[in-house]
Image (cartoon, rainbow, N blue to C red; front, side, top):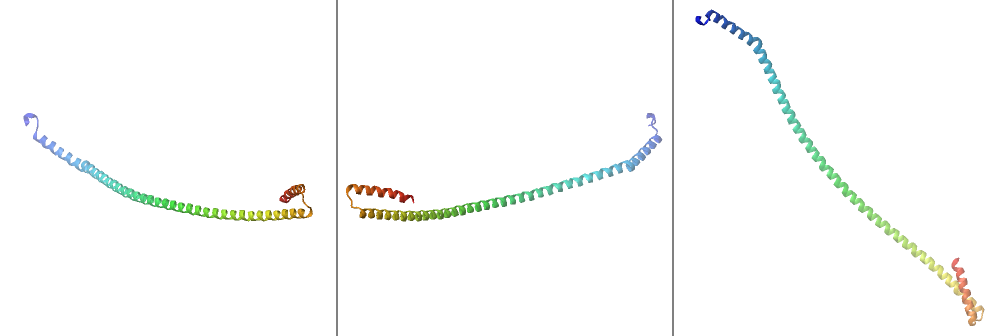
Length: 166
């Protein structure tokens, strides 16, 4: 080794220095860096676990929301269906009430018309009786010839026009 320019004392000193350097690096650099890397790995692992927990919680929450939305949708449909049935029932009740009311109005109108017809007929009978009495009275007062008979009819008709206006 001497021929190469290497002395064994220099080699031992270099090896001891190298070992001391490795020991110092291990104690002051490798352990702290390794500790920081382990801490960082632990934080990353913890963060990943939290992310997974949050993901699972979000999935559970999403499922709960979906179930609640489905229940609310069904309930809403039931309420709408019930409201439609109630609306149809109310419409039918209103129609039936309108039919009854219309029937009552028609019956009242018919009764009023019949009553007014009876009143008109009574008035017409009364006028006819008055006309007949008037005509009879005229016939009795005069002896009638053909010309007098026509004149009497014309007078009665003129007077009957006056009676209708009263």
